[in-house]
Length: 248
Image (tube, rainbow, N blue to C red; front, top):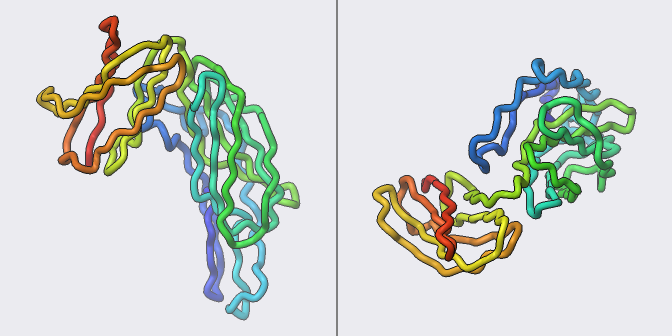
């Protein structure tokens, strides 16, 4: 992980990498990513600690070159995946190789390089759209590169592929206030959206028109009591898509 480590006139210690996928909660029944050892990913080279000028300590304070605050990837269209990440405390950062693996955790290939926007302590936001119509699971990671060539990897995130069949994804899940329904439709047509409680009692209905491809519908969830709920998309030809979400 990319962590900011301060020293109060003592020492700074870099934390080791963590394995795992962060955003699998957005999707249903995605295969688990193997551990870093099983996936045979490259060994992470931890960056050299860099002294920060004007430190209040006489012995100096040190930071890792980048603190990664967030990294996420989502399929927004059939042929495109949107990646975004946020950093702070960038020092001696050259930029990021965006790397992708299709269908498994190895090998990764670099699909783009995004240069650092600023070397400062502020918050920096980055985004990239990747041309990707892979039908299976795509895995993404960032390779952060220092000016001196040293590098470290981010955690790995997974993105569901487009299968040609309609699907319904509800996020965030669990939800506190605002719920989004992403309908990945293989066909267009009239439909009815229904929200039901755990007893299958209808709480909300809405007539919708679904276009072929990705359709995003926002649903209010703040008024719902905590528990399990279901969303159904019922097409005029009786085809049904079903999803489940948890209200916190």
